[in-house]
Length: 235
Image (cartoon, rainbow, N blue to C red; front, side, top):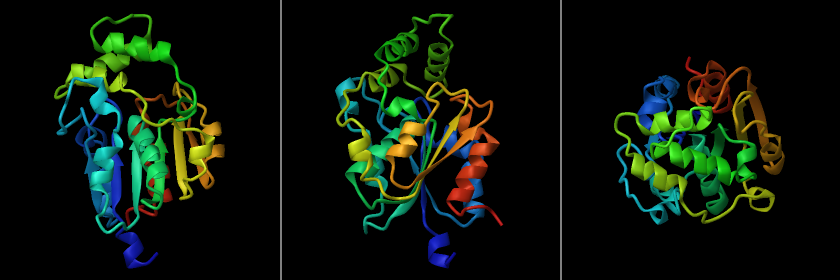
């Protein structure tokens, strides 16, 4: 790999309820990228971290705006890693901005790209807003995430209620031609990711054994697979 290739920046985008700091810095992932000589571009999506936190769902119709704003102004392709909502946002960005990315690592997404589960979303919204069903473990965990220090539960609820500006399907995903790695745990509620991998022209997949959704960004299998795919293994 040439020096110019080794210096390609890596954008890191967190999932719902997280931030660049809590998802990527605290886990040590960004430090590993730095050890490999890779500049890091951190993004906090609207409603999260250091970004503004409006309470109106309409404000979140286009989560790609902060990703697009962080892309190099000269149009040079970069690498990017996203988890859950961050992975979906990167995928939407890749659809609408062909050539923006050299390589993509998409973690914690799979069948949810194509299957809209309004009932599950409604239960999560209720949990975020304080109405927790103790028998719904997934919704309960989302509610706990919303209550973490620095989070604004009203903003996070609005994110979940956002209107979908574009829907991802096989037709639009066929235009994402860069190499893509899809990583999902076998205990993740979005597993399997076969349909997504098949829809992307140049995609491969890694399944993490005994890993659920929320544990994915810190799983050793994810870190190893992502760094290898990005040619960013520290020396």
